[in-house]
Length: 428
Image (cartoon, rainbow, N blue to C red; front, side, top):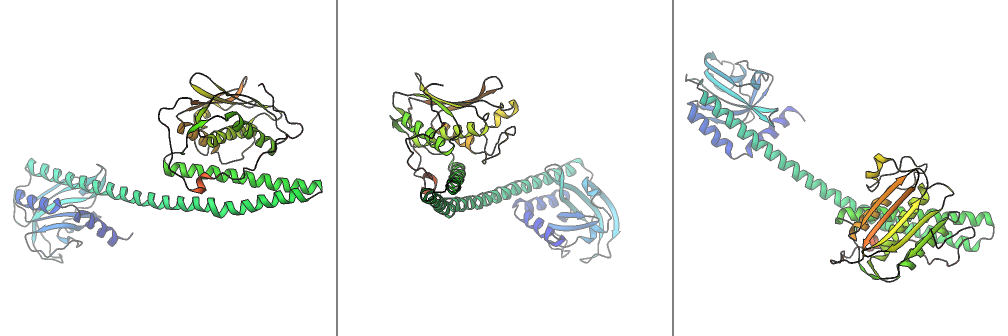
């Protein structure tokens, strides 16, 4: 920004303060001086932002006040109050009107108590007494009032700018969600369907393995997209929405999640103990998402070759869902961060995923008025515990979300048969 633009912006800022003309008028009346101004001081040059001219010097806002410039007070001197009497200096070089400046007073205008905006000044060719403490005090108070108004307007401008930026960001988020929900998901559907078709028709084991990997990677990409969709919609809407209802088939719902993971990772072992013999007020789809994310997290970060354990029971108050894995514990300093978005365990050899899974789990649990906690030690491994209340006085009901936020991807019917080498035990 050049000097002219800076002066114009500052002059516009002063012009927005309705009290400035009145302050300059009172200043002239109280001091007996006939010229007063809010001025910019740069080097030895004084430039008017706003002024009151009872001497008819022909000065306008944005003009250099050469009769002050010729006095030799620079920006360093203007950082402090200046009282100058009986100067008797003939400003012959003034572009406005030649006259003798005999009295001059100035106080700095500091925004935030530090940044100098300019100076509040007054002068005349007639002598008067300016050294009375009340005069300097009055100018100081007026300068502080102007500074306060400038700071207030600056804060309002920043807030309005932030509002506009937030609106623009929200629009970008909506576009981003639309791209994820449509432009990326449709090609992934085609990739997954193509992989499934190839797996059925190919007879060569190596080629069938490639087709299976295509399906696996397409499914993984879809899960990442679903996580981002949930995260984006949660941030835009103030949280992840749930539709609560009394669910009688919690056991079947959780078992299907386990089977789906075992089909995708046939080399893993998941030991389950699910003993829920009553209805549970919950959003079953979201509860399955929590279980899937916690199990996937355990499979990713757990000790290779060690089984993963999942239990689901009820007590007098809660449905209690627990997922356990052996392996390197979560560092103590990271325990408080694991439910934050985009957090990933730095000690884990695997860096897959965006770090949204646990965050989404916590949001879903909180939407159920529940709690989620983790304990992680070298001796006992890592265990996540989810508690959902069995008695919900106020049922949450989210507004109907767009299809792109509600529809889960790639959830084909699960085969009842389990892959060889996989065990799902009835006890932990």
